Structures are given as C-alpha cells and as structure tokens.
Length: 479
Image 1 (tube, helix red, strand yellow):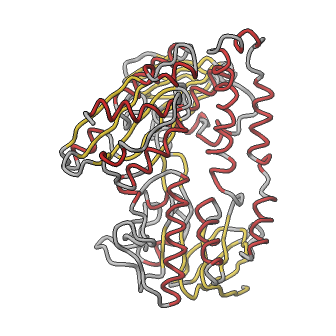
Image 2: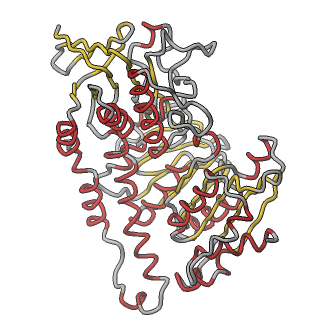
Image 3: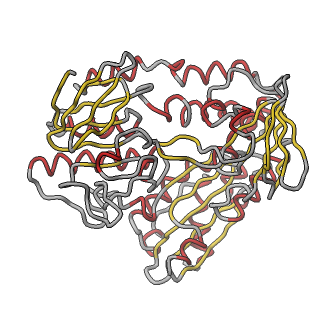
C-alpha cells in the first residue's frame, strides 16, 4: 500500500470539496482530494447546471411570446434536440477533464477511488484497480460526499428502475409520458422542463407543490403547471409500481387509481452519501447525516467533537442546507478555520464570524426555476412565528409595479416580506413571478445585513424596474 501525507484530506470532489481544498491551499497548507466519480460532483453533471440548461430555453421562449413584436417573430416550437445538446455542453459531456485540470493548476492532489476513514486522520483510498493508498492528514479530514436521491419503500418501485434526479438531468430522449412522484423543487422543475420539451407529465404530489414555501407559491406554480398541460394530483400517493415488457410503467395509487407512463421520476428527498466512508471505525453510524458544531466539526450524539476536532463535514452531508451555494459558503468557512487552527490563530466563531456558517440558520437564499420563478430568502411567515418572533407580513402584487408591466404583457407575480416587529428588520422575503431570481440578492443583503427598515427607505430603486417592489413593500408597511 502506498502512503502519503497532507495537511488536509477531503473526501468528495464536488463544488464543496473543491472549495474546501482551494481555501486550504490558498492559506498555505497542502491538500489532497478523493473522488470516486467525476470531479465537479452532482451540481456540475446531474443537478444545478444541466437542469437549468434544460429549463432556460423554454423560459426564453415564453418570455418572447409574452411581448408583442417578439411574439410575432417566433415561429415553431421548442427544439428538444437542441435543448438536450446545449444541456450536454453544460454538463461538459460528462467529462471532468476541465475540473481535473483546475485541480492540477492549484496544486491540489487528486486520488480517484472510494475513500474510507480507517483511523484518526487517516483515509484509505481504494481505486477501481483495487490498489489502495493510505492518506494521512496532519490537521483535518473533511467529509464532503454530498447526497443521493432517496427512493422510498414503495412496492415494486426499485424493480422498475425509476429515474432519479440524475437520470432526469442526463436524459438522452424526451419520454412521451412522464410521471413524477414528489412535489418539491426537483419535482416542480423537472415537470416544468419536460412539459416544455413535449412530455405529457403527471405529478403525484402527496404533500402539495413546493410545500415548504409560502402557500401562495405552491398555488401559483400548480396553476401554471396545469395551464401548461401538466396533471397535478395533490394528495396522491403511490402504493405500488410495475413495468410491462414494453417499458410502460404502471403506478397504482393508494385510492386504487392507476397512472401509466413511459418513465417515472422519483423526487421526494435526499439521503447522505455516508454509507461506505468508514464512519463505523470512529464510532459513528454509516449512512447517517453528520452533525456538526458551529465551525462545522463533526460531533457525536452528545455534541462532543470527534477526537480532538480533526473531522469536519461540509455541504449536503451535514443537512444544514441542501443547496450548492450554501455548501460552498460552508466550504469557505471550513477551509479558513482549518488554516486558522493549524496556524494557532484566533477562531472567529461568534455569530456572523468568519469561521462559522451563520447564514444557514435564517438567511438561506433559494431560486426555484419553475414558471413562474420562485425566489426566497430567510424565514417564511409560518417559520418566523414558529421561531417565536413577533412579525408583520406585508404582501404586494408584483403586477402593479411599472417595471413588471414593461417586462411582460400580462405579468403575474407576488411579493411578500416578513418583518420582525421588535427589531424592525426583514427576516424573510419571497417573490414569485417571471425573472424574479435577479431580485433575490437585494433581499438576501437586507436579511443578512439586518438592515433597519428606516435605512432601507433610503435605498431608492431605479425606475422603471421590477425592483421598485421594494418601495411598494415599504409603503405598504407604512414607511
């Protein structure tokens, strides 16, 4: 067995692991990264980039059709083959050569294979050829292995080889009929994408569409999906699944109804990729989410850090926020705190300190690229109340903003801000409507910066832009 020693060893070369290693190297330490699949991870090949490429062309077409003059210039329907080809390009045709080249340029060592913790600070890497290499970390091991799609225990479901988010993102053809189990972000986005590409889509949304968002969000997205020809079955739940010899999938619902499809996408959640990384050797449960302290060190069931604090977990695997941008945010904190501790420097672990991921608690931004788009940050009204805050909810019709009327004929949208009345700051904001994604960062700054409403009154939005909704929200509040 070969042996090598680095300051930091990272298991998982997705965006999170890459960013941890990059911050470590920038801080003057050495780093090795272990990857069993493609360098670049889920986001690059089976999630963020390819799925948004699937969605974008249809979004642009809808935007053109909502404007006189542009509408008349549009002929024909969406070219599904061209969309899939563009998607392939954004997934780098599932080649990680470019990502590997970047690792080489930064001086980060890459080890391909399955990484398993064998003892304190030691990771054993088993390559596809069966050859093992033992990597010893002087300072830290970071688990950044992400998650995989959760497939529920529904009779016959696994046997029919359903699509998960991976197969949907990498589909080489558009199925004539697509059934979707789930109503969350992946389910809503992929229903939007494949309906635009020509599939007849049925969504089985037991808990509703986008149930974690403000209620008006799910209502508007459901209405839009139905207007696009999608059959949205609220409250529907699969009891069993079979597939015929001709490939047809039959989903029997708990009420006895049957739904037939050519492909079935399961999109009900995620499960951590910790089943085979050696957790049992350090007293942790394989397959479990990893719990971390404020500086993202892994802790046991009693809240005590593992060993002397050499083990960290960043990204989806710690379940704080299953979003790529939040994982990268955590990665920056992890990389910097490892460097600080290695150098004996002060650790800034207070609220909003450099070495903690405070935004994970109440300031997470997210965009759902459905039609209409959904952009949110911070707490919903229900979550704010559950947190014990004394709040006031302010709603405004986005269509009443001059910039929205210019943006598209028949623009429909809605904005909500949730105000902490005791501190007079915004703790949550949700927008739904065409292209609201580009409004989100202003809301994120307001929430993270805890900007008082009195000061926000002086942040004058340019006219005529959709951002004028900020002025209207403040006016509706009574400023």
